[in-house]
Amino acid sequence: MKPYSLKKNLGQHFLHDEQMCMKIVESVSYKEGLQLLEVGPGGGAITKYLIQKQGVDFKAVEVDEEKVEYLLKTYPELEGKLIQKDILKADKPFEGKFNVIGNFPYNISSQILFVVLDWEEDVDEVIGMFQKEVAQRVASKEGNKVYGILSVLLQTFFEIEYLFDVPQKCFTPPPKVMSGVIRMKNTGNPYKIENKKKYKTLVKTAFGQRRKTLRNALKPLLSAEALSDKVFDKRAEQLSVEDFVNLYKQYYL
Image (cartoon, rainbow, N blue to C red; front, side):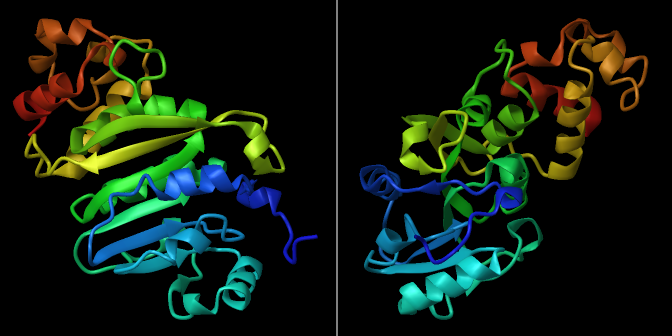
């Protein structure tokens, strides 16, 4: 019996397959002096491997007080490295560049990715486990029915690679769905988006009514003159990341 309880309201599913834990840990691009943040360490499934890595400045953010107490008791070397806070309300954990890793709680995984976007200038790489459907959405290209707001916004700033599936049997309790691990590598803002807030508004509004043409969806943002362009005959899911960047620069800057 584990000395901590499972909290369904926090979307907790604990990874117990050691081979899978190591596979996730080894997906990180390690280098001397790496600053690494783990989101939601829970019972320490991957934490115990991460803290063994030499030359890594490690921190973890965990909202659940019971898990924080358990982790500190089990792994005393975590003293001073655990931030007991909701990741959605946490401050940036490091000065300068850092990587993020986590078995992200399914109920807030999309919101965590928006935090990553807010921290984008300093986040070099993300190794994240998600519900497979979310992982596929993040990595999908235009024309796909799961392609959406997160796909466009994250692919504007990150190169995204779907790494591998994580079956239900690897968890306690087993989730109802397959999970998937992705790698996101920062591309250094290649499109030179200076006003991320404005760009995010354009993308969110475009997908807000995804069955409508962009002409109808973007009426609240753009003038009738701008909307006369033929590109607005399309729907949001038909536009590539480059298309969205062009729309933003041509009509919304």
